[in-house]
Length: 172
Ligand SMILES: [Zn+2]
Image (cartoon, rainbow, N blue to C red; front, top):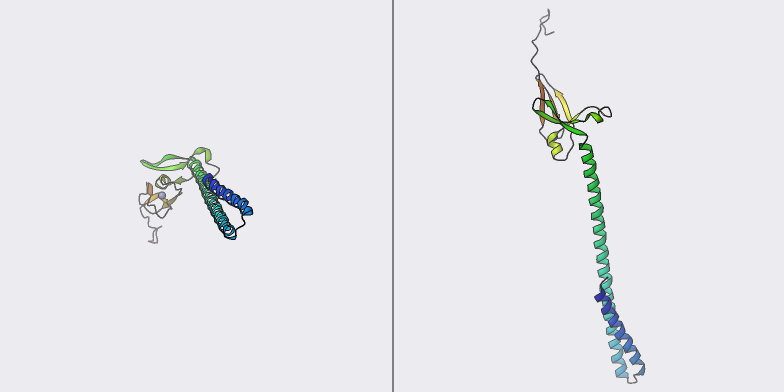
């Protein structure tokens, strides 16, 4: 509430009231006309101050709504961060091969969902990406499924199997 504007509006209204009281006793037409003009000027002034007050109040209300919205957004963000932390707390750093680290689902949570690993690089960027097991002729690896991430963890190598030929001459 802007008390200066209220005080100014009240002062203009009081001046108008004083003019109205004086107006009654005026008999001269010119004096009456001047008094009416002064009253109108004071009323216009009061109205202008009251408008300023309404605008200031509207601005304050808009400011309050903005602050309220920002508070809600921060609360939502905090909730999201807490949920993300709680989810990440279900994992622990594990050695999936000598010197190769990934986050593994903790024992306490196994059984509720299948055992899996999440990408350490994505986790450091607050993203959860489950590593996918891939296998080709030479290796088994855990690969991040996030297309922006290049994590590829080799967990074992395969020794090429000697080709055994069958009696037909084709690999058996
Ligand atoms: Zn990743």
